[in-house]
Length: 389
Image 1: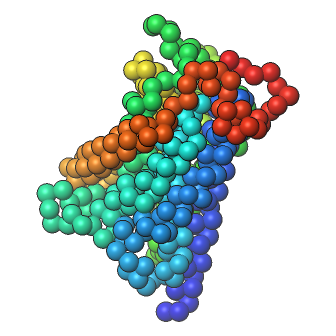
Image 2: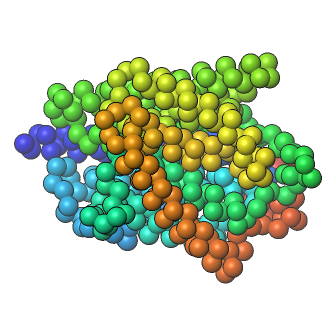
Image 3: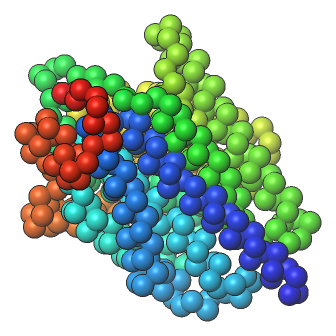
């Protein structure tokens, strides 16, 4: 009994460490996708999200989500907290990346507190936690979501959608009917960031199994990680094929986002599938990313990193996939998607609207032209380079 406790506690801490690797993953991905004049700001936001979100979750959010620190005794309560804490910042990373190059740091930090202490813990409470809506018409405990296709990825995506609707696009992104292409500044950083996220996903999904100390649980963890990787592979391959067929070019940013889309899509149920189903789920996820990116641009929803396409669209698809490919109720999955979407979008829109009225969230056009590094940080990541406009 004690040995199982020790092994599973160590497993939770190891998985948490892999998830924390996603912090530099998001930071590098976003730093590579924005222009050089905004890189220091993006890096600062990512570091502050990890620090502030983790603290807010420890002081308020965790107890709200799970009811108490003593709600389970399978592993050390401190290891369980650390594992859950590693998740919380990801919801805000999704949102912050999608509003890059036009968002000020301070109001983003304020929203981080709101998300980590209240909005995200509400969703965890309803799905993985204490469930204050149990036995009500809004009870969504029947939704199966192992590691957060909806609980984490869609939550971040709905918050991002609310933020974009309030903030609008970057300066000069849309002119009349034309969409101005703003190229990534550092493709090696984009690649490094995406691959760090991919590695972190093994802890993200594998650790969510919860135990590894028995033969059965170890086999489930291994299957979960294998299926996670398979979906990422399929997403990358299908994005590569579609992009080449359409443009006769290889776009590494789209290939990587295809992989991330596949990883998001499989996150709801990687422990439930055989070894072949994730190929289809990941391929559909990668396809959705390729076609969703231009659709969001046509809707003038300016998302520099493709977070809506990767996290919101595939968070929804991945949750539906559980109802399609397993015995879990499709209607239960749909109900969970709808309830989470309504709650998160409404709460995020109201919160961001109020924050924006108190502390202007969007940098003005002159500040965007100069670059947020100079305005917000007083420190440029590439001071010897000529700024792009």
